[in-house]
Length: 318
Image 1 (cartoon, rainbow, N blue to C red):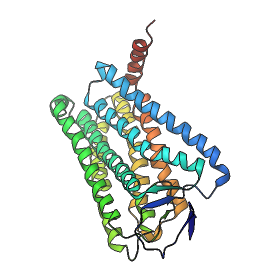
Image 2: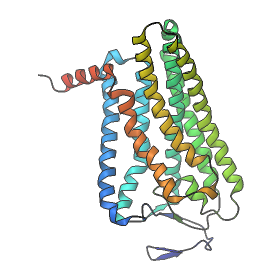
Image 3: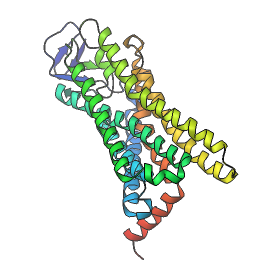
Image 4: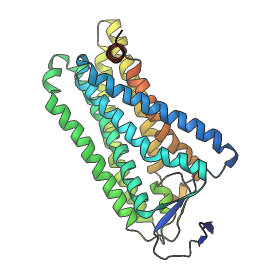
């Protein structure tokens, strides 16, 4: 039983739910201020780094290529993805467990899934782009023309929206017997803990859709990089092999972090849900991965560094 805003809720109370309570990080209240400062710093750095990538690419005509076109959309998704959850987490750390309306909770879930699943498919599109660039360099400009790149990005957003809509509508059509969410945002697994009765079919649906959303793009990525690795090993120049391998290995680090953490949450039954462990895993793909993406993909790239210098000169002319 939990008390909030003068009301008492319990699992036995099966009346219509109008709001939920996000517990947040109640396990360590003494560390809330420290955690708030750390999380706020990471959020600001993530926003600045991803916005900087967008500005650099837009300002430099030399970066008008499919790879950087995809990077702009990846950075945009990261900004949106983190903004869906982190401000709410920061508020929760300062004020304690906070109520969120059922509509607000549904919207948070939808946009979190929308941006997250769109990123899954965008990473697959980026892997395909690298495959064409390394394995078919002479046909690259023909295969990856602007219209194809735009369609691939459009498909990623459509897939993200469709998966987010399916998950959200089916979850919020269920009857809830509790309102206290033991998490820092409206995540599917902790919400299923509050559903009345047997949730087996819903768990099967969630795992099925999650497998479609994560395994399909992940398999496309794996297949692309198998072909890329085969081509790299056949390159006569050691310098070319090193450059291609460096680029691809950094991409694979991001893919492994993002898909690994996400799959560990969604590809398991509710019975194995552990609030402390799952909160930590959720932090890894809501906070850490969006911060690492601009560093791994772009800011250590020579072309991006040149673009940054050009942007700096335009912004602050001597």
